[in-house]
Length: 461
Image (cartoon, rainbow, N blue to C red):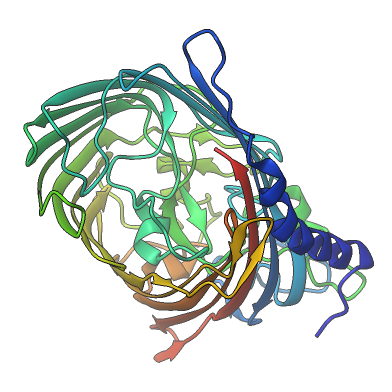
């Protein structure tokens, strides 16, 4: 194992200590000012031990010598940052304000955002993930509301079909590809009584780009990608990438995305069990080019069309046609006691390129008996094992020597993990991601596995 820098070790040790001590000292963190608004502040930090397999696969694209790292005659798709590492990935500030059930606002600011940085490691280090205002009352998935209701949300927010009650730090293939990152615009919701509801949105639409589905996004189209260490190995690899919807960072409503969802809910009313089924869809037209922070590659059609090549090479484009982008999907949430299940199916078309995504996650929260307490709070209150299966099935045949052939590969991924509560507001998650994908040019399956341990500390909101 590569020796971690002393500063990183100290950060991880300090964070583990804070995970136990800080929530005990924060019992009066939330406050309701005299204005009538209930305002809550919060902070979250995450430290990781990460072990990533090292892999590299040749790219068919004929890069010129000046586009390659010194000493390389061709380009490779390679693990972003292989080996064993200790790192601080997250430092986030939250603020939420509400006045009764009919007016609410939320902002989420990432001061450190290593794992969610996109599309490359040179993206903005400080990122406003969420910033929205909601008018009206919103019901949560699989929760039966007491009465009919409606809401209007304006700002930057998560997609309504996204799984937000996640039990692992990693993401599945489907979540990474289709709805991991926030969008900006307007969302409306209607609850037709307790059992039927409607969601709709008019948003900017997330840019189409490339990302490794493991923890780090990888560098594609960055000047730093060509800066090599003395051994001619780039500091950051490109990643073994898939097509994904990157985060919206700058407002641009030239091509808006329309979304709609229709759902039904059932439950016993006492919270012992509940079921939520949602059918949803999105549609927009791809932009000719979207400028993204941290890369000189463009998003949307500019990415799919590939770089230009001199004769006699063919166009490096994927076999695209038209500019429509649409997703049709279905979700299922099931809760029964400590057991929970989330499932999602997505059928997507991007400029004539078809692919399907499947994802299912099952988890079980086990309340542990009281043995020890710290400051009046139980130590080791709960244990939650979880398993997730996800799959991507692209149907992309033909076209030229696209620089990232992995976007054509069929993928399967298993995520196995367990989350251990330390005290209220702090936990430890251990998980293993097992990838399996088929490489047609080699006629063989391959892996890109990763082991991740996470200490998470959250105070307040």
